[in-house]
Image (cartoon, rainbow, N blue to C red; front, side):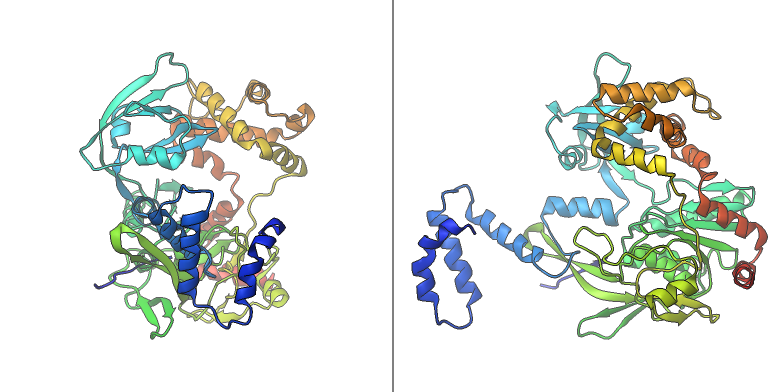
Amino acid sequence: MRVRRTLVLTGLLALPLLAAGAARLRGQGSTDGAVLFEDVRRRVLGAAIDSSLTTDAMWEKAARGLVANLNDPYAGLYSPAELASFNRNTLRNDYGGVGMQIQDQLGRFVVATVFAGSPAALGGVEAGDRIVAVDGSPTHGLKIDEVSARLVGKPGSPVQVTYERPGVAAPIQLKFLRARVHVPAVPYALMLDGATGYIPLQRVNDSSAADVHAAIARLRRAGARSFVLDLRGNPGGSVEESVAISSLFLPSDEPVVTLRYRGQPPDVSRSAGVPVLADAPLVVLIDGNTASAAEIVAGALQDHDRALVVGTTSYGKGVAQSVFPLRQGWALKLTTAAWFTPSGRSIQRPHKADGTPADSIPPPDSLETDAARHGRPAYRSDAGRAVYGGGGITPDLIVPADTLSGVEVRFLRALAPQSQAGYAALNDYALELKHGVRSDFRVRPEWRSGWESRLVAAGVTIPPAQYDSAQRLVDRLLEQRVATLAFGDSSAFRRSARDDSQLQRALALLKDGKTQAALFAQLVDRSRG
């Protein structure tokens, strides 16, 4: 069978009972693992007081235990249902379903986003609706993956969903025919400051390049002469698609990424086709949550001097995974390669088991002090600029994200242990406020007291003085949630853009830099100044 792979990225009380067995094992040499496992399996089946495990379940647990004990934080064993979820959420941008994104808010399954043109949108489902039953079966007590699994299915198949809507007394029962739902990797594309096109790429899935291509075309028709590609928060995805995205900006046959496997020659992936944006000034935004395939894009465009990279150092995932199909519909995901940027950089950073960086590198004041302080190896771009490896993609221009004041940090710390209830109260209140607000609304003082009273009703305890001192942050949270629910994500983003220091810096650079070379010249002038 040809195997295809998809690249992604004891207690002391037991001692008396064990003494005799231990005596028999003394003096033996190396262990025969197969014999050991079979002995353990037979003893568990025949003598364990917990007799709930079937033989099949025991083999599955053994397989999962093997994968979990690999020195590979990205390894995973997927059942057919888990594989379908992985493909749907990580690699693909479409699925058979109703067409909405849901959130678990204290056991309530709330519609966060309704995708345009989907059965849910055509049926009048609104953000904020709560799913209480699917096909007559209540959702109470389920996990969010279980609710999602009930909603997805073969296109054309029926599903009945019961909703509760704030302000509507009776439940709403809707019957849908599932359809092929497209989840855009680029949720919207906007013109900013009259000349700059803004493209937020949220993940690298199987249609990301097509979505970016379409966004570029729309923005050019709208008059865009320069562009911002926002990769902040992008967790990555498909290696192949990262090459296709890079090809939109690079000449044909330029190296994009090199994969090095065990016992195989290096595999160099190159750009292909005619670039759709070969020379317009381009800024790429990254942050600590830009990872994996998104880092491949940022690294390739930086090494080839095609983009000015702005923001903070990326996550640092310089390894790639392969997904191997197994029998009976299962699949195994393993780390099988390390990847390198065109200049030869590895950006792999060691991480703890919880995904946080093992090193605690503070945001550097400049590239020079960062390299000197932490010994990151320097490489050279095509034009001879210094670029750095050894722990994420280091931006050409480091711009920290907006910082919170001390009182705002203390407010968030007080809210954190109760965050689910706090944000559920915010969401419910914003659903009330969205009716009747205009697109240019401003947060009113009574809104602050309104959310505070709902926090108290939800059992969220924040001292009044602490709540009042964080007024600026409270207003921003209220503004963003109301704007999202009333007018959608793009309108909410426009309102928040004015407070986005990294984006504002990018826009200022593009205003003065009419060519890519002029953008880089501004960095040289800045370092001399």
